[in-house]
Image (tube, rainbow, N blue to C red):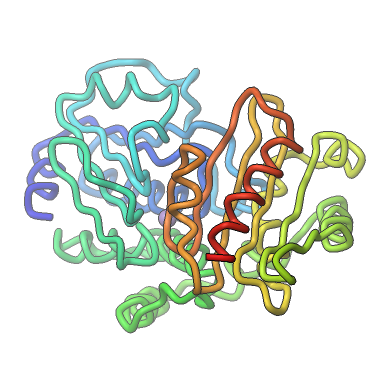
Length: 317
Ligand SMILES: [Mn+2]
């Protein structure tokens, strides 16, 4: 961490990137880092791959998209919550042109990249790592920084439900609450404010769960036609895998989602199996309990059948 702090201290112009299809940990960590850097009198910009999911709108719009960013040699590029460099996608030139690069992450498949890196696979969220980094830097945690870190940690722990929560997570969260954040408001935006079309779409998903391996494998599937029918976008469907995961007796949950460019696979485990290995078989990665991948040039059905086959092998040993 000391090397990272030195690189931050000696940089003036800093670019912040997170993994593509930014989730709440990626967005919250990026915004918190930006606030800290601006507070230090530095120039800082978050460049996102895409407009974040709608339910993250409450976190603000403190980002620019790649098309709006000028490609120049920044002093430092900080890569957050990003398991490997391929996940910054077409923003790679920003990373490659920076004088120095840093990676801060918690994906167990991350082997480290950049001039300096800090990867803690035991940490449930990049937001939790950043809290400790900021304290080490002597940064005052403002309410705004605390809100973003809280959203990051809350989201990556499934609202503190997942097995990745550790005592330190609760201690850090308590420190964030002391900053006067409105955690109930954050929870409402993150978990309890669904547009009606999305809610009805989720009703459809619940009605079409497919079970395999005697109910140990639960699969949900969203085609482009179904999204059109409910008038929603692909980014509204990111958490449908958790519907499959919530079925009694489920060991592995899978969602397969169609987008115009690719088929996205999300995998969740309820503890018995590691799904990061399954994701890796499809060119993806992630954590033991939550992982994902994407496939191009195949139909939704082809991808679904392949994933089911691999999962069946894992479950049946
Ligand atoms: Mn994360």
